[in-house]
Length: 120
Image 1: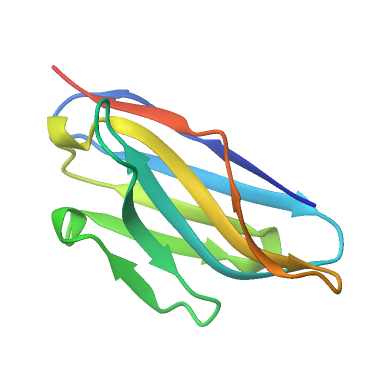
Image 2 (image 1 turned 90 degrees about the vertical axis):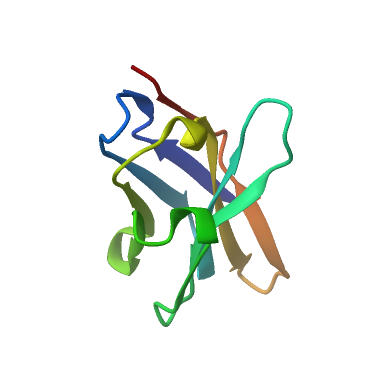
């Protein structure tokens, strides 16, 4: 079993910055891709950014040039640096870790979510 815990959300003014962190813990697992998704009120959950084990990245068009995803394999942690935040970035941000436990299948593990609110 893999536990996933996000942190770093909060209230920020338009144009501001926030850094989200997501740490995976457990024993005997191998992490493949790591990613961030978000869900605004009344909307479906959407992909924000992903990063593979080889550090290949993918971003939603709406965040390209403003958000940066990175990972620290030694700490089993993925980060999302969010700059030039806009009110439309307001959402609950979820971390997803794709991993396999020892001898187990590859599964996507979700965190509990962290609220990001962009407002003046």
